[in-house]
Image 1 (tube, rainbow, N blue to C red):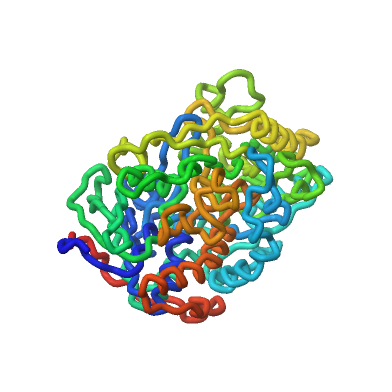
Image 2: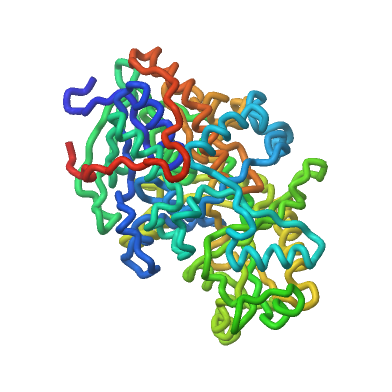
Length: 552
């Protein structure tokens, strides 16, 4: 090993679902685990209830604009779990039999809904996932459910990882939950990993990997300034026997691309087959009088609805089209979503559409009625069209601003299959919400930042075919033993539902294989740690130590 390099046994890159879950189990099993996270480490008290530049949200989000696709993700200790809306449905059974763009089953034959269900169970126990009751849903969720019923559709409360006894319905959960009601990884897997000796280093951005003479790996990182992410304050090297890449589907392939000259050839699928989970957004401007008359809604004096900002993020979804007997690309979910001021107000178009209507006098007029907006989130089956170009010199993107914003190397040109699926879901949203004049509906514009996703997937996907998958069915990188990928990039394709639970279940499923690989490399580690948290309300939290920022 290099004399000037630090040493650990397992090096985990990223602290979101894929990173935190593996870090916990390996640390609990006795391995020396180090987690490098490129974002900052914020306590719950530091999450701010605003969307001002320079506040917590610009520090904990990463918004990367590509060519035809933009990606919004987490950038902090806890990753996407800190900024997600905590919707945790299981993927439908038909998803695992999808053929997609390759014309044959994308998923490994060993992975199906039946084989993944025990791992779903484990994550649901750890994150206290429960289905909401109707009394738990938000005003926006109730309106969506009532509109679906009025149009002859069904709707369901979503399963969520939220402690409803702690939730105050502030609707700031996207900027981090101050009340520890949202079951982010900051209240379960990460504290449990720390309790078992894992070390978490924030503001450490991995740049590339190389092999050691002993068969392990050397990881090169930069230390990022806490205020200006464009600035590096130092660098370092850590050597490890096992590498777990969980930097997210927008960053993991970039790290591997940049490492190819030192590691050797990457599988063909690294940086290819990216999926935005088929995501699409429509905004409806609700007629308050008709919300009262047609749907029978009321909440006291004032408008019948007029409160989309009260409550939580997504609480109700229509799953009528999640039917395995339907043809591929015609299956999708329609989910009510609260999207806060910012992109939601910029990208929403003025109905009815006639040319670019996401700016101008008409847009200014509908902004006056923003509390009467309802946003519907579609998740269709896309064609995995995304491809990552040559990596930037450092990081996952070229940083444009001090925080939050970057320009990436992702290219996404939707196929006819994807465009037709979006059109079908748009048409159904319009049919439901414009019935009897309840609302006027338009999809968000793609003119400004292309398509967009908050759930990037599949850029280093698992599978049985070495040509169309970067990982085998154990999440190990083909041709590079000892490197595992456990984030959303491992998921083969769009899921038609929110993917956090599936990413987590796949990470849990990967852990026994990672443990065996570590044992074969001389690491004294075992598998079998219990779920890191008990029922909601039980003691869950281990105090977080001060973040380590110094360069070794």
